[in-house]
Structure formats: C-alpha cells, structure tokens
Image 1 (cartoon, one colour):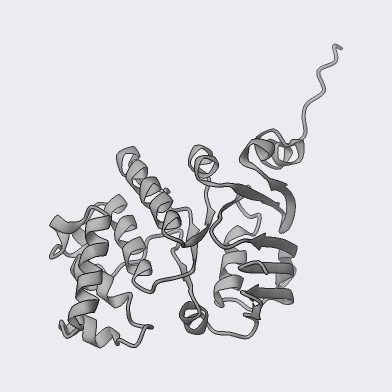
Image 2 (cartoon, rainbow, N blue to C red; image 1 turned 30 degrees about the horizontal axis):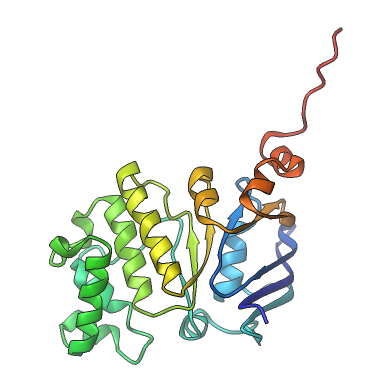
Length: 252
C-alpha cells in the first residue's frame, strides 16, 4: 500500500479546469518532486490533498484511508504537514513561540503556546527544532525581523512540530538566498532520512532534481510524465510543456 494515492483527481473553477484527472502515488520514505509550468495545477493539487479544496472527481488516500470530505485540521492530525508558496509565520511572535504554535493540533492549544504555558517536553522539542534549523540565536526574535530565508526555515520547524508522516512543500526555495537554500536542502535530506516522506513543488530545477528520487510533471491539469529526474530532464513532452514545440529548422 502506498502512503499517498491520488487517482483521477479533477477540479474545476467555473469554466476553468485546474485539474483534469491527475494520478500520482508516493511511497513511504520517498522524496517526490512535482514540476510543471505556472498554471499546471500543482498548488491546486496540494490544496486538494490537504483538505483546503474538495475535488470534483477522483480519490485521495493516505495509508489507504480516504481524505475526501475531510477538513484541513483533520488531514493535519492524520499526519500531513504543508508549507505554502508565500511563507506563513506569526510576525509579531518570537521564533520559539511560532514553533510552539505548531503543536496546536497535537493536544496543545495555540493559547498555551502564546501564553508561555507549553509543557516542558513540548518546549524542549521546539528548542531542538530551532537548533536543527540553525535558528537558536533567534529564539526570542520576532519572526518579522528574520530574513525571508530564515522565515522559511522557521515555517518548516513549525510544521515539523506536528510530527507529520507526509510533508507537502510548495516552492520551499523561492525567495531564499543561495546560502540558506543550501542549508534548507540539507535539512530536507535529514528530515527525510529520519523517516518523513516529502512531496515538493519546485521551480528550482537544480534543487528538485538533486533532492528527488522520483518526479511527476504536470501540464494543463494533467500528469504528463513520471520517472527519475534524469528521465524527466530529457523527456520531450516535459520540455515542450515549458518551452513549446520545437521550431522547424529547414531552409527557405
């Protein structure tokens, strides 16, 4: 049984087809890349998996259990964590309090995190995650004062407080300076080595091909290719989805 099974998922917004029957499977322990040009349906697919949108057709299963009709908080409690295209942190809270808030669906309230009433073992985990992300020196710093790349690392630490089995990352390297990109990618490899399965949307081809063991390519709401990074790098259908059909080279 695959950890994640997406079968024939379709989603329409009025006359616009965002997803037209997408199929992907993800095995436990994998890092799977999801690529495709803007507008190909990648983020919409994440919304459907995470429960933010209800598909119009198809099935989504996590460890064999359907996620259809399940709200985001329940999907999260079942072991799915996600980050977003635009980083989401509580700007006025300290880095430590942001991470503590990530425990909210694991039997601890956000109010407890905000009031400093978190249990000692929860605080120890939050401090350890800040250290893992290289943010220990910023534990008391308001999130708004961190660089964008540091906020990305903080967002990831916050999601990891929920101990997800499956991590959905939407363009994790976007807007991050190259030095912090290297740190972020190293942390993702270590997170995966510790047992968390990762699916990531990414336009940084060097990053996604260096991380992923398998990849899917989407275009116009459909799955157009699946395989190793090496296979997709030279796949004519994938190249055409990004660059258009090859031009004729005959003389006139």
